[in-house]
Image (cartoon, rainbow, N blue to C red; front, top):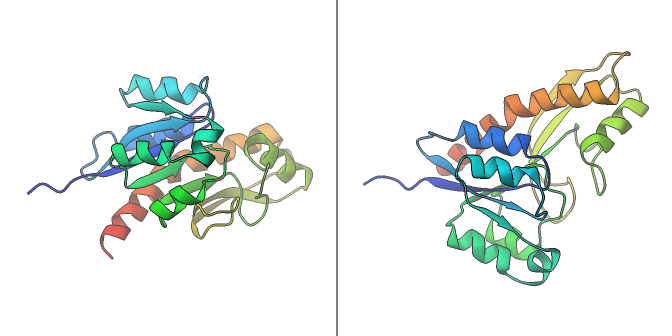
Length: 196
């Protein structure tokens, strides 16, 4: 009997470069597939990226997410086993956290616990790293919980910064780390959970 695949839902709020990278990585994977992409923004470019690969997309409002089970019902209908947050800016509500314990993975563009918390995302993070003249930065992949950027850390990758770096060049360096590591760490985490 053929084992059923682990089905991933990607949540994203923006451009979707990380989401597309994850979609491509799992396109012909033996045991893991991207089943759908959900966004809280109707004009998020990630939705166009998903359509290119014929991946179903869903758009939801804040009230759907926090005051109803609408998003949870979508995940159940799609038989989702893992949620990947790829540039998704809202806290995950309790009903979804409870339905997916240690099954929600987020990526953050800094070395947590530094430069985490509400409002710390994207270029704001790189600007803060630059202003503080940090000598290194990196990425943190972690489980999501009820607080911004506080879940258990799964993986970190570091990269050295140079005095001539700018917020823009820091962003590029961090993006490179995201592309290189995020899909692989998702894969390792999912496969490891099946062997427990």
